[in-house]
Amino acid sequence: MTQAATASMGAPAIAGTEAERLGRKRRRGARTALSSSAFWLIVATLYPVTQAAGLSGLSPLQLLGWLLLPIGWIAVNYGYYRTDLSRRYPIPFFWVTLISTTMHATLLLLMTVADGFSWHMTFADLIGTVVVLAYVGLNAGIRLTLLWGLTATTLFALAYALTPHDAATVPPPVYALVVIASLIYTLVLGLMNEFNQFSKRQVVAALHQQSAQRETIQRQHEALEQANEVLRQMSMRDGLTQLANRRRFDEGLQSLWAQAGRRVHQRRVDRTDAPPALGLVLIDIDSFKAYNDHLGHLAGDDALRRVASAIQASLLRSSDIAARYGGEEFAVLLPDTDLPGAMRVAERIAMQVRDLRIPHPASQVQSYLTVSLGVAHETSFEPARMAELVQRADEALYAAKRGGRDRVSSAAAAAALSPVAP
Image (cartoon, rainbow, N blue to C red):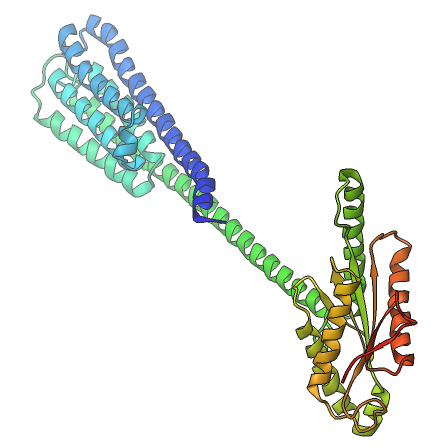
């Protein structure tokens, strides 16, 4: 596969990932804006009640002016996620949350100071502490929760001590209880947040472990498949000659026969010329038993290996199959090869073996090792004729032996044996 094709296939996946990430950011931004708007809506809703009771130090116009500041910030925060800014200038959501909550807390503190720490804004401070710490806690553990809560509570307490008090200001004992409640809530929420973060870490660790296990299993599966493929190849190969073995020959013959049969059927449908053909060459080493008896089995094994190499070297196509048929017999399958082509291959094999000049003192044919070859071919590919093809090649082989060995004979011309020149 080309790099361009790979890139084109990977582009939709990458685009989908970016779209999902942007969608999550926008949903988080919407939740942030919603929770912040809800808090400031509570502040505005409490105002008429506290104002009527004389528990607020702000006029309606002042309240409106202060509320415009958080509303503007909420709009900026929401617009950052809804527009392309979050893609052009990405900021981690944790930092966006921290900046946003700090900004809201700062506005709340300034508004409370301007209000003079009235009952209205003190109650709003309590609600704000709950909302802000809960929101911070979703993204942090106990350390950040405690740091944020203690810092905010301390700043509010200092501001209360430095702000001039009036009739609407919460009495010091009451504000002390507010501070204590904030500290207790900070501690409790910090512990809850730490447990929440611990649970998240456990889940993430479990997911990573599962992913690692899946990768390990996948690697083991791939290694097992490779090992099985190696074993399959070994089971299809003759250990001595490294040619295909009899099992591979039988499977190859069946496969080539089925393919040729389909092509014959397609030819009949399409009415095309060029019928498929399959050539088969059976090879037998002449007087090999005498060779083994005279020179020993080690020399016989070496001769088999050299003859097998010569046969393989005679084949010019990767689709041709050379196999050890049994003992000193070999077979060659030649797809898309007619009888003249198969005869040429057989002649070439006989010549290659002859050129080895392997001494054969016990031969009654030549002073060196020779082979006899029987050739047959098929064009009809009826299921019952597959065994007949092998039988005809075998008959041609024995015709070559009866004709004096060291020669090629075809099933079509078994009566007219043609000796091969030495």
